Length: 146
Image 1: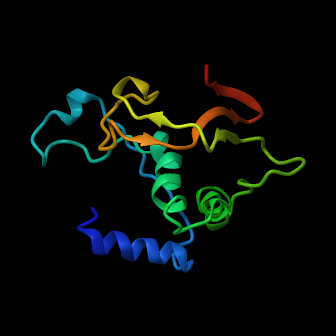
Image 2 (image 1 turned 135 degrees about the vertical axis):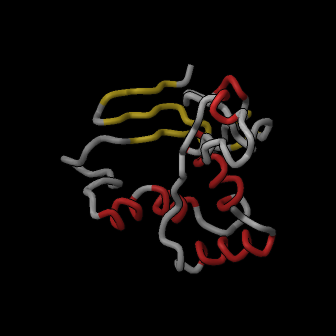
């Protein structure tokens, strides 16, 4: 866990100077009944994937730590490169996994807004930029905003 402001600033500096190549989530949602246990007995994890883009834009792009293109590379191309998988690029013949988002459109993180099996997030109530409009996986639309 992040311990304090100094830790956060050190991580941001690592992202900015490219010491840190990738941004990933440990998307590990758990059902409410699994989390409603004593701290040491409850499984670790929370919803992470669904808020990742908005948080990166708000906390890293809008603050000037990263450009939008640097942030997107750290979320897409760079993890694929590190894992040595042929993903993360938009090019002819590539697997069509795309997220289309509106950088100007804001959205509110709410308990009923998650598609995951849980809604345990410390970001409930936050307004985030970068509303996802479409998600395409393997060339098929799997999410389309109303």
